[in-house]
Amino acid sequence: MKHFDVLIVGAGLYGAVCANRAIAAGKSVLVIDKRSHIGGNIYTREQAGIHVHEYGAHIFHTNDAFVWQFVNRFACFNRFTNSPIANYKGEIYSLPFNMYTFNKLWGVVTPEQAIAVIERQRNEAGIEQPKNLEEQAISLVGKDIYEKLIKGYTEKQWGRLCCELPAFIIKRLPVRMTYDNNYFNAAYQGIPEGGYTSMIEKMLEGAEVQLEEDYLQRRKYWDKMADLIIYTGPIDAFFDYCYEPLEYRSVRFETEELPISNFQGNAVVNYTDAEVPYTRIIEHKWFDYKNQQTTIISKEYSSEWQLGGEPYYPVNDEKNNARYLLYKELESGLTKHIIAGRLGEYRYYDMDVIVREALERCNKIFCGIEEL
Image (cartoon, rainbow, N blue to C red; front, side, top):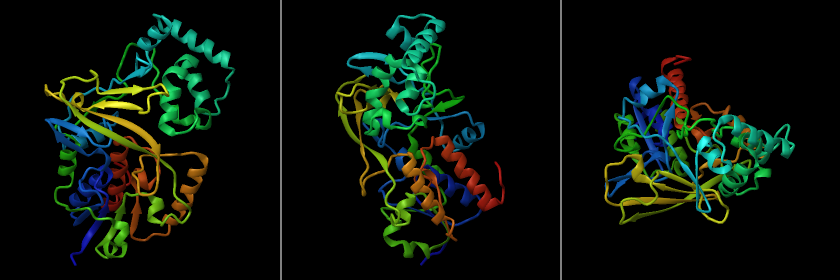
C-alpha cells in the first residue's frame, strides 16, 4: 500500500487549494472524490462549444486582491459581470434592486423619490426590529418589491414561509440607489476561460487523484494511507449522523440543448412568482460567449434534502446550528483529521472565502504561518 503525507477527501475548490499548498510544501498528496469528476459543485463540462455549469451558476467575485492573484495562477478569467434579471409573471425587473427596478415599479426617477417610497412602506408595515426574513425584506426594500420579487422566489428556494425564515438570510441582498446592474459589489469578477474544471486540474497537478471512491465506505482503509487527512464532506456524515442529520436544501437541474442561438438573452433569470415551479433558468453560453449557434439552458428546482442526495444550502436556523455545534465538539477529539469546507463547517461560502480559508489553514499546517 502506497503511503502519503496528506489525504484530501473531496476534489472541489477547498480540496484543490489544499492539495496545491501541500504539494508546494513538499508533501505527497492523494486526493479522492466519490464523484466521477473533479471540481465539486463548480465542475464545468463542455457541450456544443459551451461550458455548462453542471451544478448551477458560479461566478467568481472578490475584493481580496491576494485571493484574486492566487486563482489567476491557474486560470485566465474573462470579464463576465453578473447582471441577473427577475421575471414576475412576464414582467422583467433588474436585479440587484436598483433605480431601474424602482422606476419600473413606482415610476420614480431619483434616489430621493425611491428612498421616500421605501421609507413610507416600511413605516406602514410598522416594523422596528425585523424578527424574520419577511420583516427584514420589507425593511430593506418595502412591501411592493417583497411581494413581487422576493416572497415567491424565497419560499420556493427554502421550502418555508418567509415569516418562518431567519432575517439574516436576506441581509446580503444588494439594494442600490444607482443604475448599476452589477449584482456583486466586487473589485474583481469573472469566470475562468475554459471553465472551472481546467482551473481545478491545474491546482491538482502533482497530486494523485482517484475518483469514484467514497471515503466513508472504506474509512479504515483510507485512514491508513496518510499521516494527515483533510475531509471536506458533510460533518454529520463523518460522525455517522449520531446527532441526527443536519438539514439542507437541495437543487435539481433540468438541462437541455436547444437548436436556437439565444433563449433568454441573459445568463441568469430568476422566476419570482410562486406559480412557476423552478427558481431560475441559467443560459450557460452567456458566461463565456463565443458566438455558439446553439444554446444550453438549465432550470433549477429547489427541494428538501434527503439522505443520499446532494446537499447544497445549509439551513442555518437555531435548531441546526445547535446540532452542528454538537458535531463540532466531536471534531475537537480528532488527532489526524481536519474537517473543513462548506459541508464540513455547515456554512454557505462564497468561492473567494473558500480559497482564503483553505490558504490560511494550509499555511498554518504546512508552513507554521498564522496569517497570509
